[in-house]
Image (cartoon, rainbow, N blue to C red):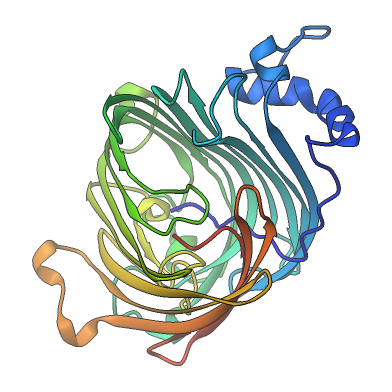
Length: 387
């Protein structure tokens, strides 16, 4: 449901392990404090010592990229990765990612995504906060909508989620999840479903929900895992009692498995499924496509209440900091659980190139080409793996 985080042509301009990087962090400290604490730092307010003294790195980068959803796009972003004072190097690093993007389709995306581990990983806080002015396309609802049903519309949305989880067993976290989204629809294609105003969400509105979340994480590395599991499930209930205009429920299941087959060769598997009941706006239905799952399909080309997807990757080294990937995936959407049919399943496949630009944290830039069943194709240039 959330837009991808784009990145290509990354340029590293500072490191917190250098004096120049330290001076840059001093300028950014109020922002980092605000993101960690959940609010901006007051003027003259200092970060606590646990934020000032840590092993950390800062990467700031301009980027240019191309995806089917945006066409040519450019912007600037940063990744601030850190561990708190006294934390062992084996502890998972916290990070804050911020990006501002403008595209050939006159889309504007401003987003921030913090992930913070506290008290020796006993607590984990994560979130996403984004504003979009986003001209997009809509083909209707269902897994067999025709290409000629395409209509254009503009969304001006703010969307967010916040997770607060506590470790209850080794690798297992559980807690609460809060979501809020403000939907605003701009221009629409004349005579289309959205211009009629009868489809839920076509007149905009607020979406507010609260639920539970559980995560099981045994990966050997956050950014470039080669062994272990990452499993996350959440259920969120949306309604007027929570300040929203729509009443519905969402169940999301994300299961991943990683295994090193030999050397630096890794196979990775994921199933990502969502189930929506009640009366959701069309923006909150399950979406096929995008740069993370079902590459090769436009994000939202097919949408409906329920979605089942699965994908696999084979990741291998090439030379120096370069690597390669081949991948394949399959999935579909349906209005009911018994509405999935094998003869309608969408599939995709492709390959990609990886470049390791941060050897310490093993952060990759990726360039993927994906191809879909109906002849669709897409090129995706991002930071970090698809899953």
